Length: 569
Image: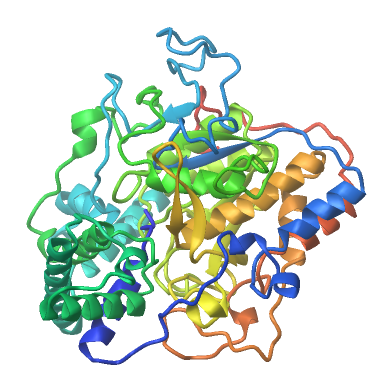
């Protein structure tokens, strides 16, 4: 899963602080919902959404409801800005304990929870896929003479996954030194936080509440200065609570320690405890439950709000699309998601009417990619568009693997219904129009969209806040795709993708673009993604309006579906 707060940047911020180098992480103010605005009118690099709606109004276009499937961690079904736009399974009677629509799942009212047990229990934590791959194939490959020429293509692929896992279990001496360095800095941050909590008499505080506070002691003044300096350097949002910041730093440190320990310390299989499916059998698919909120719906709630939070209702924020129904498919735990759940989630979404699927997650290993490929191909044949986050590692994913992907395993096939999204920013936020944490790739990333300081819904019924990541950029694109499919329902998924990419707003070539993952290396935006720019909702709607829907034709669709899965299809 792509974490909400890009932890590589936390590491960089801690490193810079300890070196007493003040970086360019301080954030100037931009309006809430800046991602919806335009550079021309509002002087921020948003998506120009007002122009899209103005065009639709002038052309007197009418919308149709569009179902958008969100494969994520869960959603707050009670939220004031979401409860009216959630999808309801039209054939399922809520809470009657029956499978009314005959899909094999009981009470799938808002979607389905693939990381839960039949008894209603929920699966929250999972290990890294790298660890699962290593221990799964260890007895088969470790210490053995492996003849790859005698292997099937699938066996070769799994062997490659295993050897990659082995190679990534060790931290370099430099990484180990940095880890020690970060631990010391993190301990100092915790000390300052403790001092401030005692002085303020508050268990939680944010930069926003700390700024005006006047400490009564010298120790408090020093703690305030040190804490604020660090959080500004790391680019922590002013609204971010100290407890959340410290928790995610601890998670980063623990993830690095896990790499050192995982070879000799088998992971705990939480899935076996709760889900109890035969994971190696894709046809063992009737597991899970109807609880789409789950124990950790922060990420999914925020993503859902970006796509379609109820517009013009006088509450917290407006989503991109104005006539969507959000179908929640809970498939993302704290840790790496499972290929089986992703594949089944896609099959479910397609079979239950989704026209766009948002996938704000990713990982570097995908041992059952053929299952996911089969589901992506099924979506393609059923004219369903998939939007995927590029990842938050500041890496070139033309060179470094990032899954899911539109390129099929052991095949030259490349899905035509798949958009991969990097995260853009605004110079007033990060000093560049590209988010430093975003993955990129001239061939592998299709377009960029705002992904820093994005204001959206959070769990709690009426809560809102800023999060960042390509996880936030993908739903911006999903929202625009849903808008197109709502007002131009006869266009194909490929035409929607074309309208989005060909209308991308390309920043002035003279404007400096900092290459993600670097401090100040300048590159042309055109080298970072296929479209060479940022999504422009106004341009995309205008281009979609000029497109001619294809002539209706009868196609032989694959027999694969949620109820009849053939992973070789």
